[in-house]
Amino acid sequence: MSTTFGPYGGRYVPETLIPALDELESTWRSLADDDSFRAELHALLTTYAGRPTPLTRVERFSPERRMYLKREDLLHTGAHKLNNALGQAVVARRFARGSGSSASSTWAARTSVVRRPTSRA
Image (cartoon, rainbow, N blue to C red; front, side, top):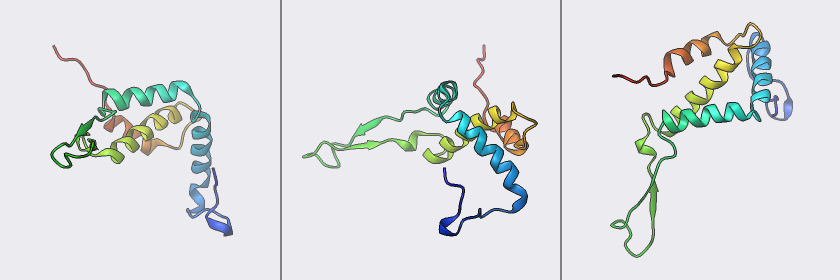
């Protein structure tokens, strides 16, 4: 992963954020190939977000062709927002387990956004 901004190098962020970004990058590198991370994210995407979304044949739109729509409209908030939020939440939760983490705001967002479904009797 490149940490430079264009051919001139450097990072396009305030200098005070560099330690937190380095820590986040280190955490991401450790999680990128972690099977349990991928399994947890996959479980959230399937049970909470409703992934994968179905393909729906649209015969009336083009009767002479086999055409399908990917039904991203069936997700709670659209596709990219929920995918991104769930991914960040899992990273933040694991990040917060580490060394006195500087991801407290992301962790706070995670605890208020991602709630596992509870069964009601």
